[in-house]
Image (cartoon, rainbow, N blue to C red; front, side):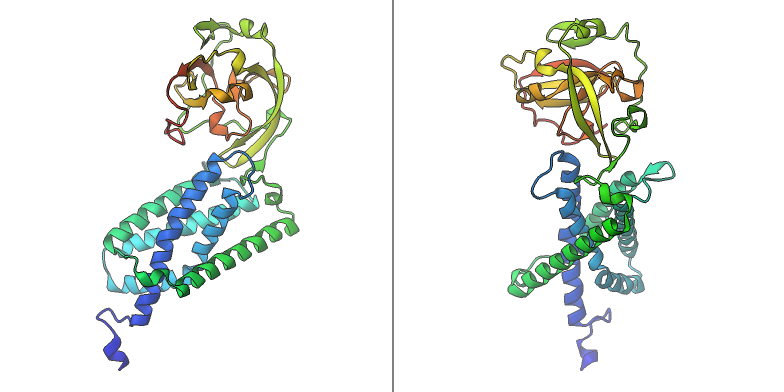
Length: 347
């Protein structure tokens, strides 16, 4: 009777059902892992539920499905279908994303050759989602009514609970072992060079290169005026201690000196202000935030270095590092809302 229950591929109905549930779970989990990862990049203030923690739990849930998914992959490889290469690529990318995330969280190292662990982690995660889409196109799996019954709910809750327990055990292990990751911020970032600007890393967004701008010729276009460094020195300077939390996986607390943006820009009827860099990089801020943003010209009591934004850069407490525009040359008011921009700059 058992032979009669097998289909042409050699799988029993029970195995097919298990494989289907596993594929459906991965199809839901992997996009959620990417979404929460993106949210953890975007959120700069501590909240009751940290996206980075949710991201870690979801990633561990994916890891816990490995035994079931590996069985599916082995059966697929025996069939020698073209899609088997997609499955193999998906498994490899998920393994790379998980392992790089674990190493990053533990703080054992932050680079592998020319790439940072965060670049590897994010790249593998995005690649995995692409492979999931290609896999779904070749093997579409539809939701059914039974996928939302009580048994399915209990399975999902059990997987989530086990993943949360594994995450809590991992966090306890990191602290007990005294690994560098024990001191990481809620965003997952590790401390680098706080209160010592010489040790603070110098990073830029993707293809930005550090421009060398002579202070004598630099001008800031703001509010219909062109201001030089000597003009800024005449304005009230404020000292601000703020944390720059970079999406590269590090943070640094420093003392900055600068001019509050509401002293430089008169918004009038505008809804947002665009802060633009010498490199063309820009971010759009709501006018309501002008009193909580500073154009810094000094860091740690000294002028900014070229790598840290000389002659002037933005200081945006509570926002991740990609909002801290460097080498600022223009502040332009706009009637467009502040949310009318990509969540993350493309370049």
